[in-house]
Amino acid sequence: MSMKIRNLVELFTVLPENERIITDVLRQVVLATLPEYCKEKISYNVPFFYGNKGICIIWPATIPRGGITSGVLLGFWQGYLLRDEDRFLSHGTNKKIFYKIYQAPEEIDEQPIEQLLREAVKLDRTFKSVS
Image (tube, rainbow, N blue to C red; front, side, top):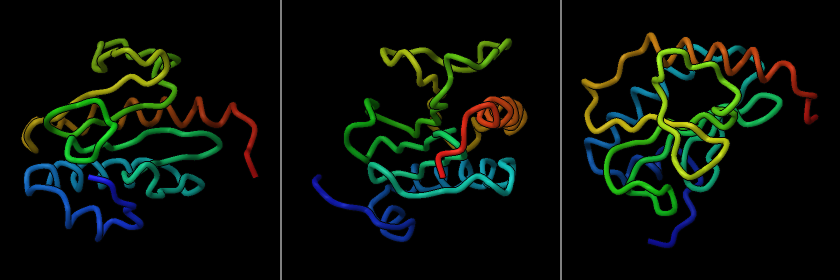
């Protein structure tokens, strides 16, 4: 699948229903938690959230190069710097990005995601603004 997804409508058109629902729920949690200065854009054909640096990414398995074969990955760009005391995130081969993979919408527990997002934003505020 070689394509250039430019917006959410295009993304949701190519995703199977399960991945579309998980992606949508995760996006709502992220958007509701991130402060005003953070933005969302489509990057690498998936939703990418950033402030001064990348904060998190939502990568459905249908989109190539995400490194997963099923479900939807919620990845934290600076995951290696987050405390993550509850060991909520997995550490794959990438040294920086730590993540959680969801196979069903029912698996999504908003509380730990919101907690990690708040910590990621606090960390993001320590980086110099890219503008």
